Length: 171
Image (cartoon, rainbow, N blue to C red):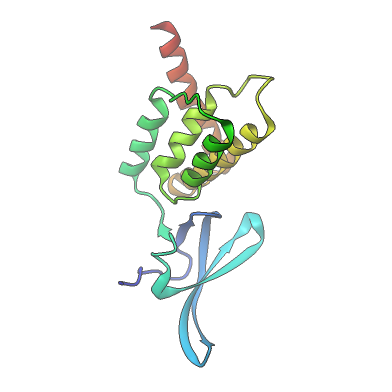
């Protein structure tokens, strides 16, 4: 498997933690074998994660999305929300799986689908937590790519969905 090309200060995305910064590539002896590790700092979690470089891509570590990928995300957010009638526990597992997949479009689908009930006072706590987690993860990548802060990115994403909601309501 080919190694992902990374250098210090590169912004990367790790599926279960979001956007981080490469703080270095280091060699470490593990079980008598020297292994190259990529160290990624997640500032918001105050955590550094070390991943074997040869398994970085396999573990889901990737560079930030391109503008064309962000355009796909915007069109996904503008799309019609899918409503599932199944049991919440199954849908919650599916949403968590999409959030932790590392795929930004899947993440956008979760945000879009759960945004429809955002103002519902009867919404369950777990649904609210999953929505906020997905929105924060998506906004984190948008903020890093567009070089804006997290609040601005979140506002842009929510506005994208609100414009869609008002257009759909008018139709």
